[in-house]
Image (cartoon, rainbow, N blue to C red):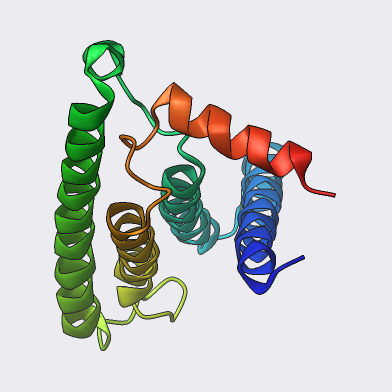
Length: 172
């Protein structure tokens, strides 16, 4: 397993662990609330923080896998040469949006780092830090998609995903 594959596998495991912890936290909080008229005061905020990280890391993973929402009816009908140009432009648009996410969340993280939540004692900047990590991952993915010779198809195009899957199946 290459280092890059191991890195993305680690992201998958982090998402799975966060999902498990969030589900357990919500379940325990519901049982305590309805069964014992009490609850974990920090449980709601921690589950919300876990959900934000799940969504942001999941968005990065979906972009890398080409499994995000794509409407490719028009794209599939374009000639191959034009499809390569439009695909690169799509990757560049994703790169610009990802960089905007990265810069905006970085500013919010820095601005909120000293704001401490009264319920958890954690910095509220941890919510925005998820956007920093996700924006960085998506920016690198989009930059590679725009530059590498194997990334000319529009992100999420069925043809691009099919070729990637077929290439992985033929490897020993």
